[in-house]
Length: 260
Image (cartoon, rainbow, N blue to C red; front, side, top):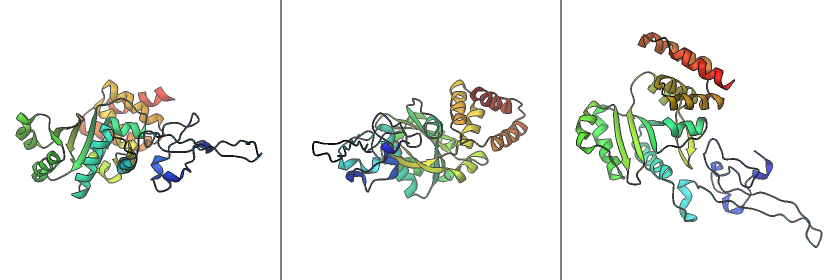
């Protein structure tokens, strides 16, 4: 990042580093935080007295959700929902991670999306209690008439927040999801720090899904440079053997060739 993007404004001294993504025409959107935040740009110049003066240009964009109150800006819908999920799930000591387009925006490149996908490790006997607690925080079932049946199956719980943002809650199984839980890391999405799946696990998920937009996301992840290709190949080879398929590795290699 250009030196002029360095944050030195006194108002941000106590704020998280994720805010300091850049300001001014030299600076870019932070790939990891997905936002432009408070920063300053220093310009040298000589005034009438011949002394160098510094001009601090402060840009306010999407702000860290945990500190919005002091500037009076509203949260984005994504930040609002992620903040609720983080609070509710972390307070219960549940392991979870964000995947899907919101995760690709962090590990690869942003794309428009109107939903949030999360995987949560929770006992099936505790799913209903978790959903009730989420409902109290503004996340209700998208299909209330099918809620009991879907909860009984315990695989995916479709929710919608009062803001209109949809959330698909996937109950973690064994295998890839357990591995993804183990190495998810917390990064900022719209200023809210949440656990996000590793780029390699996301790439494998995208190959398995195989839709057009998934393959677009796969190429984005590969271009981001965080995917361990050897590990991805090994995992997909295991999936091919387990599922009796022979197209998964070829799908990955086609995406690799497309970005070279």
